Length: 293
Image (cartoon, rainbow, N blue to C red; front, side, top):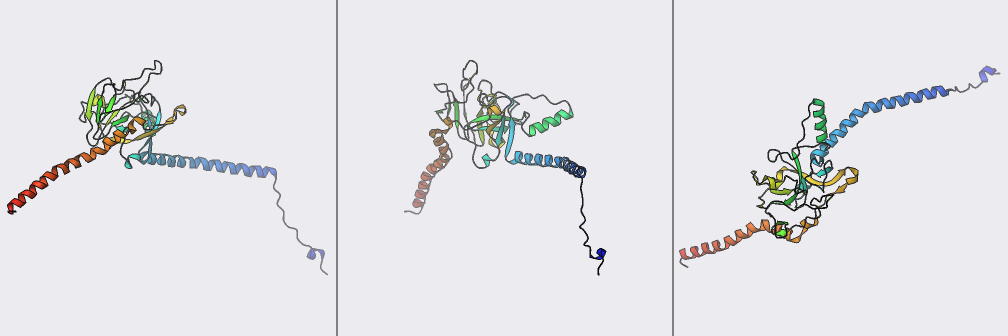
């Protein structure tokens, strides 16, 4: 006969956990997670900065509006996004609002005081990098004339013309918010033919803008090089109550302007053919005479 001790089935061991122990474990877990978050935060910030720099360098850049030269379209303090890829897929078009570098060609339009201490300089550099502080070397204007265009002001109606066709600029030229009086297309007369690789640009606030008209004594005759264009401003992103797109005004879509642009590259070719035909005929006649035919 087996004894009770031999026949007894041992009971399973049970672990009892108090509420205090569970709470302590939860607290330790939370502290561990918080500690991990703070350790990872610098890495996350670093990755975000690197991504922002890559995007800024190759795709989209924020730009701070430092002056009133583009009012009412753009106000002082507005932030716009600039597409840096678009001109790799198409040429600069009339009516585009572009940001370009004016270093060594145009004087700064808005004087920005130089920071006086290292911290301020560092903050300015970061702010400029991300478009929240002004950069006195970059400008923002509207393209009026592209290579081959003849831009003139003014016609009998006081309008700017491109290749003899007047522009209707009422939709974007500065209008005084108090008097409702609108700027004239230009207070000075001019006529310029835009050379290859150059652009004629003007601000929407014509009475205030220091644009191509004011730089006619410079080497480019007031025009700016196409290769200095950083990109096209396509949207206002700050402040929120001014968020809006920046489309090309309808006046620049006139069929007559497009026809003039289409003729520009064709004209030299046509002239070449016109000169080649009589030259070919004359050469053939001389050869026939020499052969006695």
